[in-house]
Picture 1 (cartoon, rainbow, N blue to C red):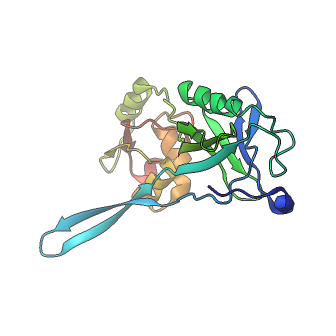
Picture 2: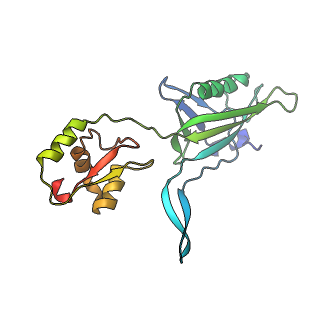
Picture 3: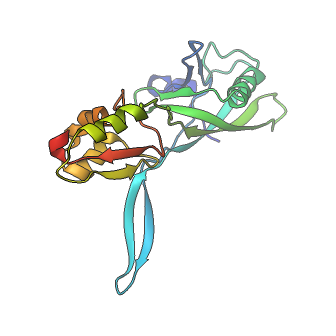
Length: 222
């Protein structure tokens, strides 16, 4: 593991873990020399008769992050002055967050990194007889899934009282779907997402439930 020294502190970035529920934050006492975060989509390869393999672009993947940490047992010139000399207070904090499934906000100062995460694992050891603790914290990006209450009665009433010139189709919401994306695919106009939500008695167009069956009417009925 490599870490910056205090003489480089002018360019140091802070690695911050914020517990927004309890309004507390933890800053790593020694800044790691590097970090890496991936961003991308899931690509599925299917084989089509007479054509061969075809790559189909899916939805965005969630980031996996690993951070190598040094928790000092004594005052070092390269550690934050507020770090203290109890390395296991940091270990216990990450263990508690992991056990409690706490959603944290992971921030790296002066970068775009500011994402919700869960602590998947914390692995730690002592190596050199100094009492310092070397740890690797594994994080997984968190995506909230919120159940939305809808009125099936309202939907059925609408369908029986309105006469459609085109029989509406249905669409089962899949992981990663948003009404914005669905409207762009079905109507070619993503800005219709609020109207599609209202048609399906969805109170918040930004919150949809995986597995819910949407009714996709003709655009003239929205």
